[in-house]
Amino acid sequence: MKRALASIPDTRLLIDPRPPEWTEYPRAFFRGNTIEVARELLGAWIARRQGDLWLGARIVETEAYLGRDDAAAHSWRGRRTARVEPMYQDGGHLYVFLVYGMHHCANVVTRPEGIAEAVLLRAAEGPHGLSATTLSGPGRLCAALGITKADSGIDLLSGGSVRIFQRFGAPPKTGVTPRIGVDYAGAAKHWPLRFFDMDSSAISGPPRMKRNLAVQ
DNA sequence: CACATGATCGCCT
DNA sequence: GGCGATCATGTGG
Image 1 (tube, rainbow, N blue to C red):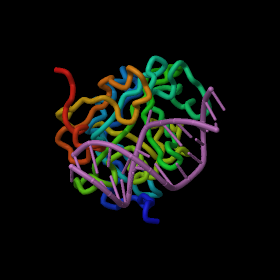
Image 2 (image 1 turned 90 degrees about the vertical axis):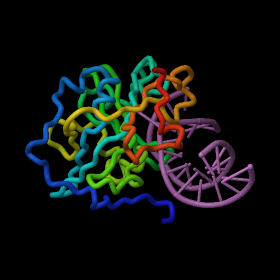
Image 3 (image 1 turned 135 degrees about the vertical axis):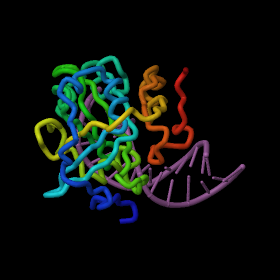
Image 4 (image 1 turned 90 degrees about the horizontal axis):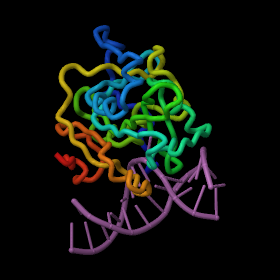
């Protein structure tokens, strides 16, 4: 099991079940501009129900995938297969897929039904800042929260087992780079669609990907 | 730190 | 049949 990722969620991620003052995003938010959603989700909380308990983590890194005109997106050129189908759902659903035969990646679907765009959740950090490793990277984030493709297609706004709550306060200082792992995507591989909290220690990828590369 | 490699299998051509 | 929206490990500078 030397290579197995933690399948038992880190108890340090435990949060009080749904603090009542927390606010979920309205449907209209997820139907909006995908890049804006990707930026807005920095600092937001993802909550995962495990039985009677909820695990929570603060999102610190996202990527936007822009649908039919984005060669890096699974929905490029309108591809519509069983796997990708959740991307075509209304904003606010979850799209989860398996990569490299072993890692899951979780996405928040954006735009109205029929427009297949999404925001990949790449990293998060625990409430006490102790989970910089277990939640850093899309595969580890899913492993830590127990998210698998069985969760693909669920609605984040129906009180189900995965929910997202609004950040308190202003957005974090945000770094921008091209997306990771999409070298095959032609010109789209250069698009500045990866966003991260520059003050977080849980950012995934090599050090050069932890600096702001945006053309100012 | 940079880079290379193997693991492992669902999905698409 | 080939490859991937990744990760862990190993090598070398």
